[in-house]
Image 1 (cartoon, rainbow, N blue to C red):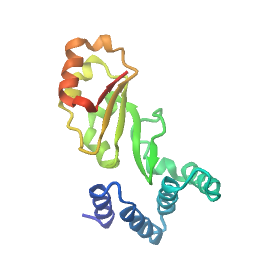
Image 2: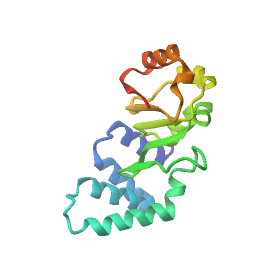
Image 3: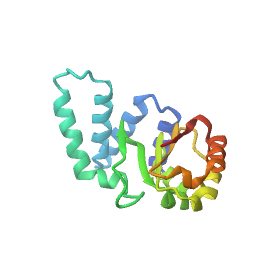
Length: 173
């Protein structure tokens, strides 16, 4: 396991604690990786009051870092037309992706985004149902949404099967 992986595993084990994130940010800085600054900025913003006078500068810095480097941090892995993922405290925690592409290799995507908590699968078709029902969700994924899908095309039995598989983590639009 690489040093980077060790840091990530520590963060996964302590998702609500910023200390491992900030230690990782320091290590990234030592490697010359601008993501270290991004993690630090987002952790500061997460605990900062809206009226804090430092907030504006940090939000501006966050936006610049995302504009300059964000494409590297989400790897454009989901699809070129995917909506930009939501980063929280330095990691992708929310993403919307094309269902078929994601279902073709879910472990790959869960590996790229180990702190993903909210995933929307767009354009799910009846042909995707078998893969969707076999999908094993990591414990940190709190919400799986099936979006922009004509649910009637999936059928009532399919929707019931999805609800049985994913329980209260499933969101249907």
